[in-house]
Length: 236
Image 1 (tube, rainbow, N blue to C red):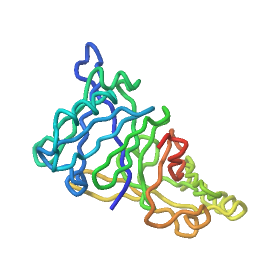
Image 2 (image 1 turned 60 degrees about the vertical axis):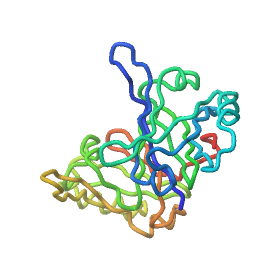
Image 3 (image 1 turned 60 degrees about the horizontal axis):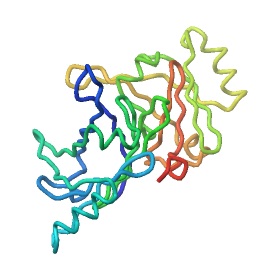
Image 4 (image 1 turned 180 degrees about the vertical axis):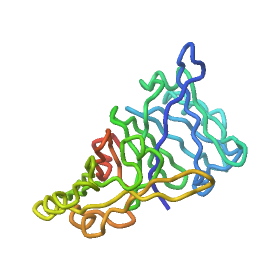
């Protein structure tokens, strides 16, 4: 099993904005990062790695020295409430150039987690099913109309103001430009409204995406662009 995720650099104190990474994910245990296990934290260019240590450590001092020689440290996975957590802060992050507010993309497999700093664009991870309260902050409110355009390696979702009132014109526009027209849907979850829409399968296929593929969404008000993460460009 392997996958991708997102992380964010927070801060220890508001006054100093000293960087801190408190990383929690439901998959940590499945990747071997269980509570109390020994882990290497290793700084890497534009990011970092967490490496699970072999249970049969012959010389702890030698492992500690080799880790420190790489600018890292030995640490443990912590149990946190009902989950697991990896925590690093201060100079270890600042030395990599990570600061409060930085977003990181995460690649993981058993025994290895690697993170790289993302460009400043606002990002989310999505699939064919684009969902979340964040859609409303971009103007994608319930029943709002959007168009979906596909090109190789790119899907563009564009909000159309007053789309319901201008249905006839939008339908002509969509047909002329081979776009899909969608409306934002809503559902209730634990007394909260969750917003969502699905990318049509034929538009995923045209872009070269699989229906179950995780995509990187960059967004601004009224516009969402979906692409595959370029791991080479991101420094993995």
